[in-house]
Image 1 (tube, helix red, strand yellow):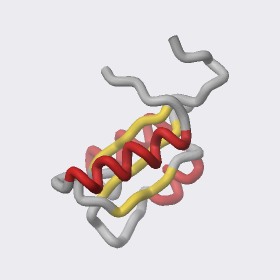
Image 2 (cartoon, rainbow, N blue to C red):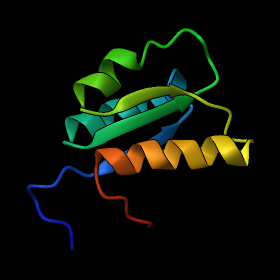
Image 3 (cartoon, rainbow, N blue to C red):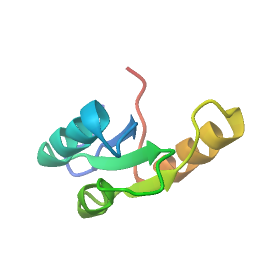
Length: 83
């Protein structure tokens, strides 16, 4: 069980636009720290994810090494849950 004092972390792929950006905004509104991942260089999600206490990362999720780096970054922000 995660304490209510500990911020939950959401890893959101494709967070620079569309459904990914909407998901990042919703998670932020609900109090989650968002680690937003996208291959896009222009990041309209950057302000949203940083305001949540998270991070906007440039990564290609087809690369296992990139995914490992993203998970490590997210784990440094708060506890991760699988679900």
